[in-house]
Image 1 (cartoon, rainbow, N blue to C red):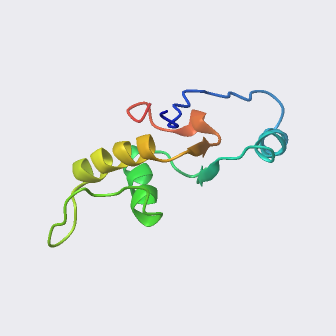
Image 2: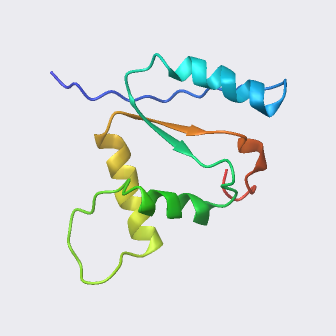
Length: 102
């Protein structure tokens, strides 16, 4: 039996002030059994996203190379990593990100 799960859920919390939205989200997340990865609220561009992915090692290259991986490689490895891991990504105040990112 395949125990891989695909979580394609979105939770949108609107209204109130930022602090109250954050508290509501925290209450919801307290009871989940997934690995939780919070992205910084200051993240506005896709480049910021890739920096967090690199810093937190949220990718797993399937081949070794000398030197660094480029952004496209990291993004591809990251997509595979998401499929192989049971994790929940949290983006707060997402309305602040650049249109090209969404």
